Every structure is written in C-alpha cells, then in structure tokens.
Length: 310
Image (tube, rainbow, N blue to C red; front, side, top):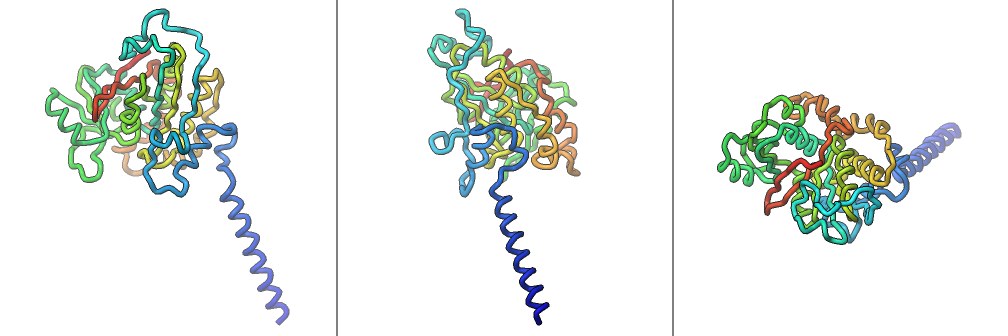
C-alpha cells in the first residue's frame, strides 16, 4: 500500500513539474527572436493579434500597438539638390520639410515576384487585392498577363501563380501585367496617404534603403504585412528589422533565421504543389540584394501602379 501511495505521489509531482515547465516555456520569447534587440519592430509585431480575432491591419493599428518603427528624421548623406528623385510622383513633394514614406513589406512572395516582373520592363504593372479589379482592367488591355490566384468566392483564371520562379520562366517585356495578392497589395492600398509608397522584400531591401537615403528628411513607416494581412509572419518581421538596421547604418545577419523560415512559413515551398509553390521560390525570396532598384507604388483607387526607381 505504501508503495502505491509513493508511486502516486511521484506521478502527480512529475505532472506538476511538467506543467510548470510548459507554462514557463509558453511565456518565453521564441529563441529565433533572440538577438533582434529590445523594443523592436520584430518583437512588437508578435503581440498585435494576441487575444484579437480581428484581421491584422498594420496601418489601422498605429494608435493601439504600432507595427511601425518611426525613423524620423534620418541623417542622410545625399539631398535632392533641387530636383526630386526620378520616380517621386508628386513633384512638389521634395520641397516639404518632411516626406512621409511607407515601406510596405511582403517578403513571401508578392514583392519578390514584383521585382522579377519589373526586371523585365513590362508595359504596365498593376497590383490589386480583388479579382474583379483584375478582370475589369484586363478587359481594356492587350495581351494581359494575370498573376496570382482567385480569392475565396472568385472564379477568375490566372496565368501563373504569385511566384518569382514562374515569372522568371516567361518573357513579359512590354506586356501588361495584373497581379492580385492579399497582404502586400492591401498594405500598398491602405498607405495611399503617404507621399512615397515603397514595396519591399529581402531581394530589394538594400536598394530601397539606398533610395530612402536620397530623400531629404524622410519620415519612414515600416509596415510588415504578415500572413494575408491577418497575422504576423517571421519573414516580414525579420525583413522589417533588416531594413531598420540598414537605415541606421547597421547590419543584421539573416542566416540565423533561415532554419526557422524553412521549417515555418516557408515550409509550403517544399510541399507537393510545386506549380503554386516552387522550391526555388524559397531561395529567390531570401536572396538579399538581388535587385538594384526600389519599387514605388502609385495608388489609384482600388489598384496601384508599380514602377522601378533607383
């Protein structure tokens, strides 16, 4: 009898220890977040959707929990010298004391795809969140290329998925490209009040920062859009922190996150659906510094025009 009581005591005591360790681990930061610094964009983003069932809307949450890292004013080495940058759309803007810049991040995969599209110099490049917009605009364009996939409830057929690898396999020079995506496009459209909207992934982050540093007194809002603009994502948060470091003339080693990205948000690149999610997309999306141009968006109601700028 005494042995039975002793075994029962040991069993329940073990359960207590396991429960305490589990609760402690739940309250610890993910080890992959270590090294990102203290109160950073990356760490703040993790708490935005905590106990919150509403869609993740970075631009709408600025007053509650800001996913922006305010970087104004920046000390920049190069000014306008009396002329606006090549792709600054509002010519009078360069005379302002402060230029509001929205850096919208969608690293897996919208703006990696966009970089590969713009590398080939399409005639027009349109970004939107809705298939109805794609269908409406495509009806007035010759030889359009439709990139993406239909949202729930839409039945439009797209030519290729939202994939840099699929874009690379086509000749799209001088074609009219219409690209539907969720998170990145939503961020761009919501940022319509910014003076300059820049679309960014890892592959053009360096060029984007170089462009920002040509601006006089920019106020930079970094907007990592996360998964479908609903929940934070490791790739967009890491890209935000990488950009933040570059803007402060620092460097961030991203290789420490490759394993977590491969096993987490990037795992679908290694699934059986290789048409939608080619394995090569994982490498291409993480190719830091692959392109030497920034991407600027001009919002026009329910869509945006994307252009190269450098």
